[in-house]
Image (cartoon, rainbow, N blue to C red):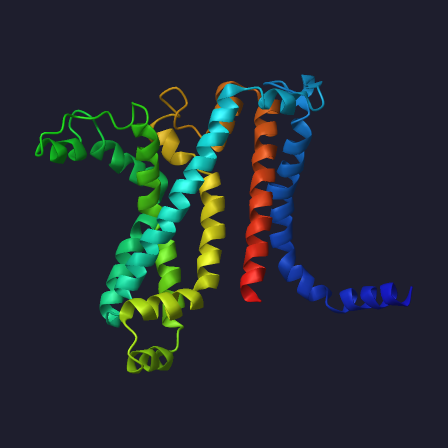
Length: 297
């Protein structure tokens, strides 16, 4: 009783502070929490355009999902996208960051801006550029391959090229932020420690393997977590490039949610897919947080 009274007095004492953070909470509740709860509830109904006429079906939506070949294909594609793009993003961005780190400040600033620019442009803009590059008739990629006698390839209209085309496009605008983070982590490493390793006769490869990489491990785990969530939510590149084709070979769960809700008007099923995706991301995030805590021990 005394503890609750003390808590109320503390809240009342700092009531002005709570007013400053209230707008953020109101926006979160109105535009994130309420739609999330509504979507979870809607997943138990069979609903189309007229939501007021929805029919309660319980867990039937979820049972049917795991019997749906399109959903299973989208699930496998989403996991495969994550397993391909996330390690590639970390490897490429780490290599570039290690290459930029020894350069002087002005040169680093140029490369930081150059690699971060695609991130600012976004997936839609870059997808339009890549549509021109990957065009089978007049695309730049087929033009260069023609110099080596390679026949034109329909990069976004054939299997498995469409899947790898999506991976390539996503990679081009996801490496910018990790490069910046890796450079910040490398800059935080004590120069005295690196100079001591050089005086001890360690090679640059040994310094990178034994000193740099272990010290930037928290940064790497943060990038792993954020990029995993980002790729699980992939849809704009698929929408612009392949429309999930051919034969759903490049579709993802988020793109399937878009198709199910806004093309087929099956809102209950789309909500169920969204809940499954939410649970997958939640489990993956918990595993990564546990890995992060273990790395701090």
